[in-house]
Each structure stands twice: as structure tokens, then as C-alpha cells.
Image (tube, rainbow, N blue to C red):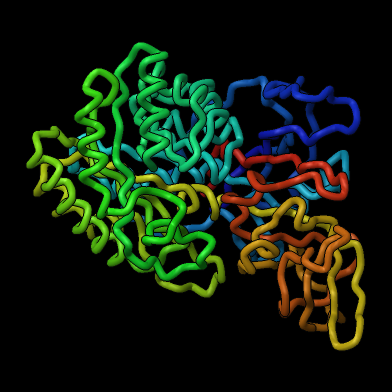
Amino acid sequence: MAAAGTAKLLSRPQQFPQCPPNRISLNPRPHSLSFSRRRPSLAKPLKLRAVLSEPTAAVSSTPPPSAAFRHCFTRGEDGYLYCEGLKVEDVMESMEERRPFYLYSKAQITRNFEAYEEALAGLPSPIVGYAIKANNNFKVLQHLRSLGSGAVLVSGNELRLALRAGFDPKKCIFNGNGKLLADLVLAAKEGVFVNIDSEFDLENIVNAARIAGKKVSVLLRINPDVDPQVHPYVATGNKNSKFGIRNEKLQWFLDAVKAHPNELKLVGAHCHLGSTITKVDIFKDAAALMVNFIDQIRDQGFEIDYLNIGGGLGIDYYHTGAVLPTPMDLIDTVRELVVSRGLTLIIEPGRSLIANTCCLVNRVTGVKTNGTKNFIVVDGSMAELIRPSLYGAYQHIELVSPPTPDAEISTFDVVGPVCESADFLGKDRELSTPSKGAGLVVHDAGAYCMSMASTYNLKMRPPEYWVCIQSRIF
């Protein structure tokens, strides 16, 4: 099966130095670039269009529930890499500027969200709150909102962006250990859920409620002290975390909420264990502790309706075919507990919704050897994608085109041009020696990549495109 589609610009790359400071444009003028598909099974030409100011048709390409999982980036029989049937090399050749860019599959975003919807079926009014910090592209947010997603926010600007994208405030949750008063006032006025993270956070929420003249629906973020068995930088629910409150202090917070009946309404409890979690039993352990806390809170007269178990489900970054937990596996571990207490479940996926929908597409600048090390130097870098440098994270890397017959296979570090020895996208990768200008992709770049990109060395943040399926040819 092949699919015809278009790659559409999600965000325009920065232009230096034309943009005045502190101004953000989400709707640049559209322009068109055309190229022809080389794949013989397709007759229609494809267009690459910058269409931020044009609405896109909502077309669902989600397979039926019984269909096996299929990934948006696949290697064709001709040896080329495709995204939803669109040859990645063709997208590269269509670019006016030769620079790194992010390439998404809109259909994969839909499939990922619908996997959560299917998993939550049967639970009363569950909320899927997409963690905007993972990827804050405006078009991506609008698409997720159109699918029924809520939003999880960790800053005032994320809250403003979510409101602009049309998210229902009643499906938005404002998290964070350092929320500012002005942002809390906006949250109070809009009626979003707010998590209480500390004593001073509670004080600020009370003050915000008074300024806004509205009672705030709050959840207590309690640290269950469950080890998520992940990198310490992405572990958030243990007793030494900067996030949340220690369970030993629960009574103090309950008394403080009782003391402010005109400002606060306690409606739920929240926990967040961490990220890249691959063992769903950890969620079950945490949920069991949380429902016990909820029982204690209800015993004191509070009407608790919500259990928020956070997010953090991991993905197969290594592309080894490992069998990892699905959204259904995750929800099934907590379903009975949620139902037994008559609770509404809130889940906060980020990485598992957006990471595998995207690649960072680079061009090879050259190949070199120093000492015992071989290097592939590309135009992308830690400025565009910092996870490997920041966390030592692994993301699968492969070439866009089939190797030439005489290309030797060697072990390479894939590095960028930034003036740092920490500037690498992957180490010790076995790849065919690429030619100058060859395409090279870093997979699973949809989450915590573009949202963490910088302009270090005055590199401009890259453009983002997505492939929109228009039809299927069987």
C-alpha cells in the first residue's frame, strides 16, 4: 500500500536578523514548492507547501483497532526511507534552503492519540492531557485539540498557547513547582485545574483566586516515592524530587485548603513518576498508594473526583523491536483501582503521543577520522536536538538513501558543527560510509527535541514539516 500526501510547513525557520525582538508570528504568508514523486505506484504529483495560514482538512488514516501497529517511517523495497509513503529524499530535494528540518507524520499523531482513547474506553469522562512541554508546535496542538485532547501546562506561556489553540480549559491542568502569581491569576480566570506543589505555591494560588475573584479547582501533587527506574534527570516522583509534596505533609495541606473555602476547591490528587518508563507495574504501585491517600482525604469530608497519574510511558528509541507497554497496558494496570473509587482518570502523555511521529533530517557535510575515531559530520547539532548531549540519550540514526555498492560499513560518531565536544547526535553507530550531501535522520525526534532547541553558535531553529495523507492507493 502506498499513500499520496503533502508535506506542509508547521513552523517557519527563524530569519536572522530580520525579526524584531519579542515578536512571534504564527501565521506567515503561504508559499508553494512542487516536486514529483519518483515512486512508480503513484501517479499524482506531490506538493510541499508552507500553509500555516491555511486550514488543513482533517483526514483520518487510522487503521481499524484490530490492525497491527505500523510506523510512519519505513524503509521501502527500493532502499529509500519513506514517511507515510513519501520519499524523505524528495522532501530534502524540494527545500529552498539546505538546512536541518523536522519531518512529522500527522497520521501517526492521530494513531497515537487514538490508542489512548481506545485504552480509556469504558472509564467515566477520562481526560487525556497532552504535555505541551514535549512539543509546543501550534499546528500540532490544534490537531491534538481537534482529536479531543486536553493540555498539561508547566508555564504561563504554555497556558496562553493552549488557550489560543482552543483547548477546553476544563481539560487543562497547570503543573509546576514554581508557578508565578500572574500566570496563576490567568489560570484562575480561565478555570483550569491547578496542582498544588508546595506551601508557597498554595499561598500563591490563594492570592490568585482572590485577585481573579474565582474559586480554583486544585489537585494535590503528592510524591508516592516510587522509583521509576529511569535516568535521574527525568525521575520526578521520589522523596528527594523538587516536585510535589511529601506524603508526610498531607495533613498540613488539607488543613490549609480547609482554611480557604472561598478560594480553593480540592477536587483530586496527582502524581508524576518520571519519563521513559517501560514497566507499567510502577504505575500500578503508585496508583495503589494514591487511592489510599484519596481515601484518607475523603474521610475528612472532601469530595475527590479526580486521580491524575501523570504520564511518562516510554517508547522504543533503540528500534530493536522490543515489546514495550502500550497505552492499553498502562490503563489496564490502574483501571480497577479507578473504578473501585468512582474516580475520573487524568493521564498526561507527552513522549508517547509525539516522539515517534518525527525525524530530524540532516545532510552530511563530510566524513573524517581522528585517531581511532571515525566521524560523520552533519549540519544538525545539539542546538537542534540536545537529548543525546544532555541525557546521554540514544536515538536511532540511519541514512535516507541506500548506500552505494562500494560504501564501507564502519563505526561512527555522528556529530554536528557546534563548537563543543559534547555536540553529538549519536556515538558508536554502525553505518555505511555516506557521501557528501547524503541525508541522515535521527528518529523519534518529536518530543523534547524542537521544544528544547536553541540558537547556540547563532544556529537558527529549524523549520518543521508534516506529511498529510490525502488518499490511499491499494
